[in-house]
Image: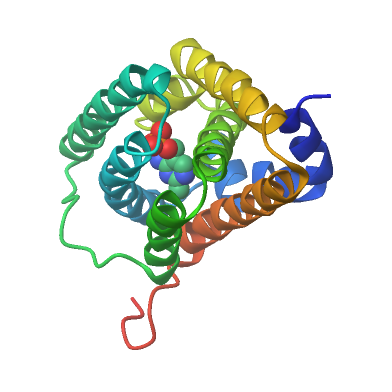
Amino acid sequence: MGFCSEQLERHASLWRRMLTHPFLIATRDGAVAHGTFVRWMRQDYLFVEAAIPFIAALVAKAPRAHWQPLAGVIAALEKELELFEGRARAVGVELRGAPTSFVNHAYVQFLMATALRASYAGAFTVLYAAEKAYHESWKAVQAGLDPGSPWQPFVENWAGAPFGEYVRWLEGELDRLAAGAGDPERERMGELFGLTVRYEIAFWEMALTGASWPGLED
Ligand code: MP5
């Protein structure tokens, strides 16, 4: 069994908890409050912005063969920012100006710390886990979302075939990196996988509850 399948099996109950999070269920069923979804949009816009320097930091450690694919990821993230901006215009909300929430801040710090301090295989594990999480989370939403929903373009972005192909590429590369790693490094990669899934759950939770910082509650 490859590393990725092994991790998905090891963390199966956390993974299920993520995919059945009430934020995703409510979005799927068209029952999510407008303000709640907009909160997610504002926070995820900040997250995607921060993901660009994370990928750039990965490039510095990457093998030559990963430079071009990672440059492609940066270009895709720029397009994603435009997707957020377009959706915000379509529903008449201001995307910018919200403070980065506590959970978002922590997640982004974790991304950067991992890119700078972990091995390339470790940082790549975090990238894979985050992208796989979004692909599957939005597929869970896709399973019931009204095609006329204003949130449909987000579903298409992450649940669609091109993103699925990218996640499969990440999976193949991560399995190869893990096969070349020693036991202690593979163990550390497994820990990073689990932490990333926990951050993903915390992010949906933050979107649902609006939990921010002490003194900045909305
Ligand atoms: C992703 C995201 C997917 N946008 N937000 C969170 C909290 N986790 C994962 O990453 P990307 O960079 O949008 O493909």
